[in-house]
Amino acid sequence: MCTAGRCRSPIAAAMLDTYAPRAGSPLVGRSGALVGAHGSVPPVGITVMRERGLELGGHRSLPVTPAAVASAALVLGMEREHVRAVVDAGPDAWVKTFTLKDFVRRVEKAAVRGRHQRFTDWLHHVGEGRTRDDIAGDDPDDDLVDPYGQRASVWREVVDELDDLVRRLIPNVS
Image (cartoon, rainbow, N blue to C red; front, side, top):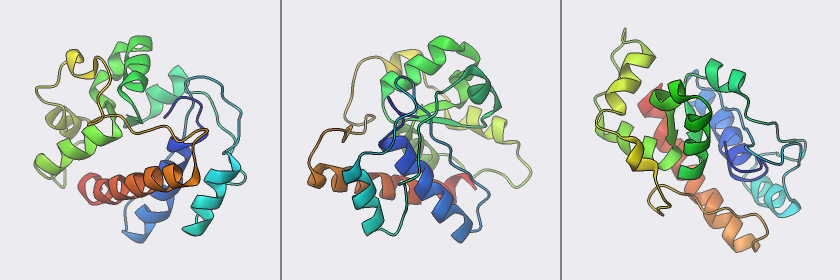
């Protein structure tokens, strides 16, 4: 999820939906907006994604709802602010809600999920030692730059970073 669901989260979801099946992973991405839903990806974002063979021209952002959060196995925000908003709205979501960057770092350090281990049990392990203070403030180690209104070069940097994070995520979660 991201602020308006028009830039980072649809890009990450499109990458996940493209790369996961290629890796034999059952992961599925969904994009959500915390505010200002029902917008489309800006033209520069569509162009940058087409350069990678991914199509976002038909994307329309949808709001993050309590029902969507409750039904998700994992909720990934693009900034700490997004995680705070979800957890403030539903404290039970804490265990499964992370920033994308933090989650990737954590899964790369965590023990591989056991073949018969429940996903929720594994998430508890991944988040072990994490406190709500960990999502206070802003931190470039956790927050992805919002490319909205930026030059194409900024979009490419964000897309490159998302591509790296999504590719690192898939083998560690599947």
